[in-house]
Length: 253
Image (cartoon, rainbow, N blue to C red; front, side):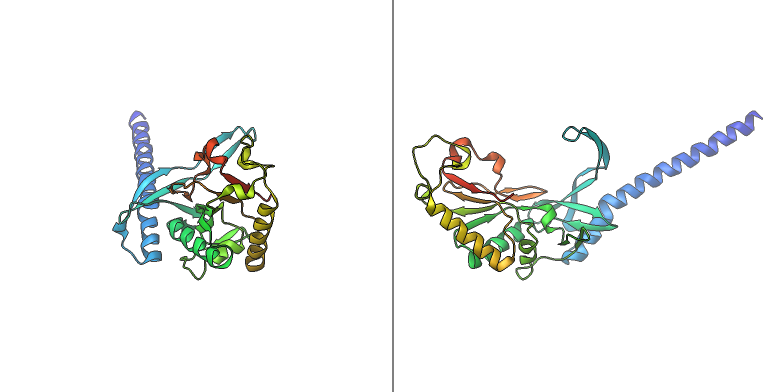
């Protein structure tokens, strides 16, 4: 009887060990193999051109904003070896998506808007969710695509660009009082010149792309470009209170 129990325990131990090894192997394949196969096929590159940068498994987390326990999806960050860029790789609806092209998409959309809306547009912020694919709002799904200059307008038309920055050499021409106390991006301190200028931009934007959801930042200071795994552009959280004096924001809620 004792031998029989020991035998059962050994079998259970072996089964648990096998399950653990299968879990580890499956995780390695999910994190390190399948995404690289996906990326190399999509961009016609080699698997060795990419390496895992970071990984966080999905987990339940207490959200203080909603006072509830919510599920946070896992995130997987890869690094491209040729230029060192890092970017999200997302597994949704039994398919991989990626944010590898955030930089190119930002540059192409900026060029597109310079040609069709205003030549002074100098940066369009792009988040990872904008480049996972062509977004279908009704189905809440992405169509995975390789972005080019010819199809980035799909992101604009879907209203999935983030902040748009417009350079000016003289912000004062759009202000009522250039010596006024600094407010939130000169809120309440703009004149009719600004109203006419922004109205013209939004009309052109809407006529061309049937969308005007983006937040516009008219700015005089120069800003560094931030490149992260989920965002490319100008980090508005790094804008100082002093710099706000030489900026105006136009938001649509």
